[in-house]
Structure formats: C-alpha cells, structure tokens
Length: 452
Ligand SMILES: Nc1ncnc2c1ncn2[C@@H]1O[C@H](COP(=O)(O)OP(=O)(O)OP(=O)(O)O)[C@@H](O)[C@H]1O
Ligand SMILES: [Mg+2]
Image 1: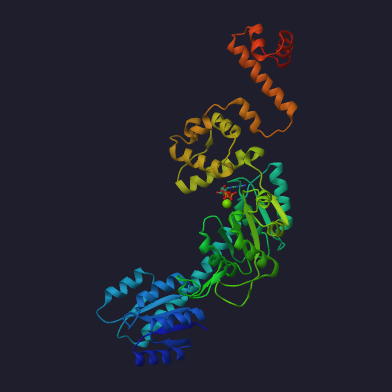
Image 2: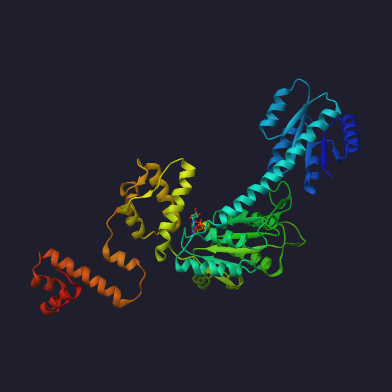
C-alpha cells in the first residue's frame, strides 16, 4: 500500500484529508509539525510526504530540504496558502514534486498523488533498465589480452561467485576498482548494491559513522539516525578502497564485522546483522605495514583469504593498443570527436613508454591528445611531452623489470661501449681507457655486439 505522511498544523484540514485519502486506499499518517514528521520518517519509510509550508516551528520548506538529504526516495508535495505562489515555486526548485494551492478540493491532491505514483513506476523501470545496460557495458570494460590479464580473468571468474573476501593489490591506476566491480557483477549479488568507500579520503572522525551509521545524538552533528554503508550494501558488495589507510581503531571494528557479520551503529547498544561481501583494495604493501604496526595482522589475514594482483601496464604491453582503441572510442563518444587512431610514430611512443601511472595515465594521455589534435589521426606532438622525452637508455632497460643480471648487464655494457666510442670519435685505445678494460677485450666486445 502507498504510504503517505500528512503534515499540517490545522487540525480540521489534516483530519479531513486523512479520512479522504484513506478512503482512496492510501495508508496515511497525519502529524501537526515538522519535528513529529521527522521522527515518523526516521521510524518508517513513506512514499509521499504532503506538507503545509507555514507552521509553528520549522517550515515545510525546511522539512523538504532535510527529506531531500535523508530520504531522497520520498516524494514531497507542498500545500501552499493562497497568494504565496513564491513558496510553491521555491519548493519546486528545492526538489518538491508538485504543489497544490490552498484552498483545494481533496480530489486535486488525489490527482497529484496518482500522477506522482505513475511517474514513480516509470522511474523505477527506467532505473532497472539503465542498471541492466550499465551492467552489460561495464562487464566488457575490464579489457586485456596479455597473459597476466588472462590469468587474472581466470582467477576472477573462479572466486567471483563466492562470498570470500578478496584483497586487490596493484600500483595506482592499474584497474583495481574495475576488478572489484567485475567481481561483484559476476557474483549472485550482481543485482544488489555495489558500494565503494575510499578509506583514505574521509576524515577519521567521520569514517566510523560512514561505515556503520549512527544514532541520533551520538555526537554533536548527529541530528538524526543514519544508516552506514554496511547497511547500504546489504545483500551486495562493499569495496573498501585504500584499505591500508584505515585507522587502527576501525581495523578492529572491521575485523568484527568480517568475523561475525554484525555491527553497531555509533551510539547504539544493540548489534545489527548484515550480509555484505567485503572487497578491499590497496596500493600499499600491507605486509610491510603489519611489521611497522600500522596494520593489524589478524585483519590482513582475514582480508587476504585471496589476493588478486593487478599487474602494472609496463608488464603487459600487449594490452596497450587494445586499451588505446577502447579509450579512443570512449572519448569520441564523450567529446564528439572523430579520431580514428594513432599514427605509427605515436603508436610506437605509446607502446614503449613506461606508464608509471598505468591505465589511468594512458587514458588521460589519450583524452588530452584527442582534445588537442587538429587531425583525425593522433601524432607524437599531440601526446604529453613526458612521453616524448628521450629516455635514458639505461633507466629504460632497468624499468623493463627483467631481473636477470646477465641479460641486463649485457645491454648496459653495449650502451657504455657505444657511448665511449662516441665520445672518443671512434678511437678504440682511448675508449678502452675510459671503459677501464683492455684494448683486446674491447675489440672482442665490439665484434660480439656488432658495433661498427
Ligand atoms: N583493464 C582495463 N580495461 C579498461 N579500462 C581500464 C582497465 N584498467 C583500468 N581501466 C581504466 O583506468 C582507470 C583507472 O582504473 P581504476 O580506477 O580501477 O584504477 P585503480 O587501480 O583503482 O587506481 P587507484 O589506485 O589510483 O585508485 C579507470 O578509468 C578505468 O576504467
Ligand atoms: Mg581506485
């Protein structure tokens, strides 16, 4: 049954409307002021709040603004006195669905309610359709054809259906959040909420109430009861991003939720149950943080029942061109451009660059190039300057991440010999001196590396 809360200080009108709306099949509660209205709303959810504007105490407009914030799903309809059309308009601007001017026939209000109900049904269908579309779109968004990504996908598919906690690690911009989303979308929870919180971005004092909610009066600013994210994610998935930033006091509380599936709102004395799959992401080395006492060992063991490591982009260069095409398409849509791709030189630069900021840096570079480019094909000059700087060849070699001393030493040796020969304009005796090797050894190496 549709639930309506009527707020008006005029008792006769209030009772008459209540009787009328009940006959129309609504479930109606009627109260005489804003404070009573707010405590009703804290107790149960209403589909509609129909409120007078001018009342002793808080006004209907104040009620409206609190409801928009705390109960955004509730539709508000304002009853404004004859002649105060500004109030009505102000209410609409502030987010009221509609208004009726007093005096009105009860049928007028019933008509507005019916209209709003129909709109609600449409909106809900719309939301579901959009969510379904979004799910399909983002399903394919985690791209990769490199071996490291293929094996990541394989593990992901295996663990997704279970409620197991997963720790997702990787450098900044590698796609940790996307991996978390993929885990959610491939789980039986896909239809329920996927909620993320960045533990590093919220001040410590607010974090606990964000996560677990609070009771009205639990602290100075707690003006009403508030649900936390564990409740918002009930039945679904909660991603704790930058989990390494979680203060120690909350680490204990998190451990408790993970172990017992219960938590307490701040200021409450009873436990609440929740059914939430927790995922955690971090770019920190939590094992090192355990050693320094920054992170609780027991929590780390609880979180990393399974760890997914998202590899840095430089270790999966086969993915670069795939991602470039993907981002070119994405930003053509967003920017309305008609870019077809990169010219061979620009492609080479993009494929050889080290990408310390990983996929995010690649995405930003492509977007920037598309904004700046004059032609449909992106050229080296359109790319950020950083990408075009000639690399120190030794640093580039080291950055490849190959740990073999033998292979790396050979490459660096060749670089040094070429430099010495350059500097001495090909004088081998002098070059051997600079390199601090014998003349004979130099001749041998020149032949070995095919230097002319
Ligand atoms: N494999 C991928 N396929 C397509 N897009 C990707 C992929 N990996 C990352 N992206 C895109 O790169 C950007 C950064 O990804 P995301 O936010 O998931 O990274 P992150 O690891 O969480 O970064 P941070 O550590 O900075 O929080 C996003 O726009 C994301 O859509
Ligand atoms: Mg992230």
